[in-house]
Length: 448
Image 1 (cartoon, rainbow, N blue to C red):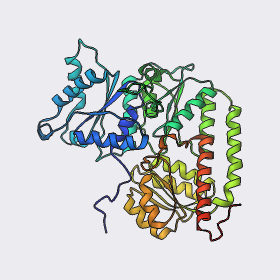
Image 2 (cartoon, rainbow, N blue to C red; image 1 turned 60 degrees about the vertical axis):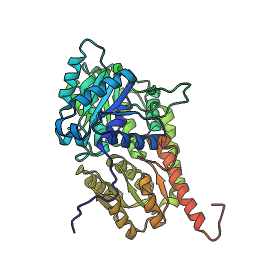
Image 3 (cartoon, helix red, strand yellow; image 1 turned 45 degrees about the vertical axis):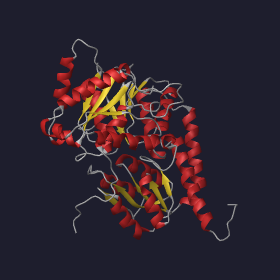
Image 4 (cartoon, rainbow, N blue to C red; image 1 turned 30 degrees about the vertical axis):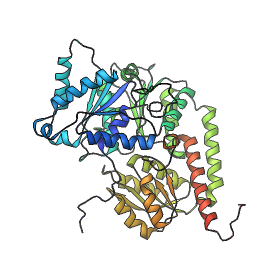
């Protein structure tokens, strides 16, 4: 029987991803060209994950603008943003409504620049993000690509910085990456960097635009980079910011899986060593050693445990690699995105680790995952907060990682990347398994 409706989606709106990406630019405010409800949904969703203020403006479509176009609303909205927030950058994303009627944002932006030709106007970066066509992950990549298109200038230089496109990771992951570059003594441009804007300190006065983010001057330096690194398993050249930077400024780039786990982290550090000409710092050699030692310590608890994992394609593929390295058995691996690469890459990964029972669900929603989970007999579920009801249904603990995490605090501080992130996840997974065994034991042992 063919499926005609999505039941409890695993993916989210494309402008949501764009809104997150724009938060990684200094003094930037996001505006959605569409209805107020769209902006409200994005704000509420991101606030719940990051626990930080999130202002997102809207061109406030009405029935009239949906028929005759939203150009005037857009221009008035831009004027309001400039007067109220005084931003240096405005990230402008479309919505389903403006895309459906064919409103030309780029034309309206050009008209707006003409209107303010004698006034100071922020940099406006527009991106097309129709949710009926793309997911939040694609909206994120689209926004980053638009930043490259708008701001990158110059030509690649051997003494230039390394540009890093980390994708949708946590604030703690971004801070970890910055520490890596500092230990390699290499200048870098991180696009985007919301590690401070979405997890700042306590303010004496409310900040309309939280401090932090990659500056416009730094973003312009992307074009003079010595090289670029992009984290993704499934992104296409057409979607890729790194590929655009290569075409525009001649910057060579490497595209690698998100560095979650041992082998993926090895690939990242090897790429960085080659790109910078710097040997691996002892700090990370020791981190790697601690991870390998911990994998040996945990193996007797993890080996053969049956896991359900789901989430964004890139993150799910990378995390699956680590789970299989650690000896767990993936029985269901699901993602709603439809790149066409997910099933192929997961099949290759499963064959490499001789994981024969895996059920790979591409283009799946939680209805599909729940239906499959009833028969799978899983010991553990790993993914976002969306898996809570499934966890209750099959009586298996849920380890919350990735995006979004709405029913716990600290989602922005979960470290996933590098050897340190793998060690953090390994301890979390192992202790969850031990706790589950302990709570179900009639003995209630305290020594293991």
